[in-house]
Image (cartoon, rainbow, N blue to C red; front, side, top):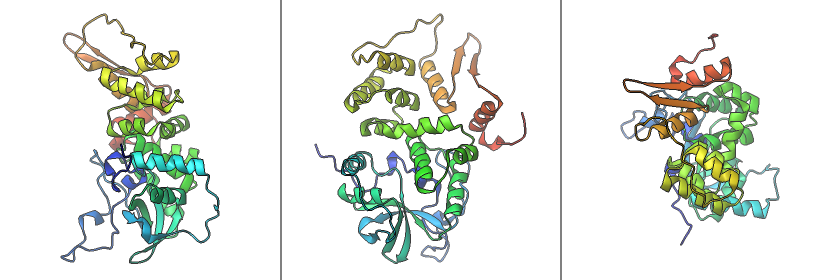
Length: 324
């Protein structure tokens, strides 16, 4: 079976590409009016919040043949084994972390950041590569605009992980700066970035939403990619809970039946799954109880800062720096 993939694979996540408009703001449509993509704020996927403007940059699919390497690139040697792994990943799930280029002509771009991704894209046989086309040399301005939009856009876990990793690697963003600007803790950011270490097959399931971030984090304890894939298949086929998967992983027994937790009272179908989804979304323990006349959701928090973080996730419109 061929592993080649079409050059444009937007369904599996765009990382930083989801945080900026898809065309320069100065371009005009056929009638002379600004195009729809030229609006200063772009609606965040799945959200009613507009992204903040990103001055001097836009997102585009750029033909790899129109890009030339940076003349002052300090890296001259690329590890063959690591490059082979990146090529395989790109063939399987596409490029999650856009490169950064600047335009030198109508069909001429110079690479600014991401030479490994650009080279691996060519080796993978793709014709285009997702890129942030930068019109300014102000790295700090672009970095700050992307940070501003991180908490506005509803990214899937894999997009979020790719965005975090690229902010840290390409833009010199520190863990402390990233955590402070988007209202998350350093451990949360580290655990999210670790999702990029999963096998490509498992990453595809996470990006598609058929595997939760909680399940994915449990699979990180497995080093064998084939075993990760088999367990992921079981989770999807059998509806195994996160805690059930954690028990299987702890015992390293992929064929072990998932534990069945006895329930003291009947619950509505899918109630446990909803609780797990809320736990993954809020990154804390969430209990959902259903009574005869009404139900109750219990969200645990560790500190006031943690509570503020959870409240911001519940309703980003209420983001505030005032004490609770």
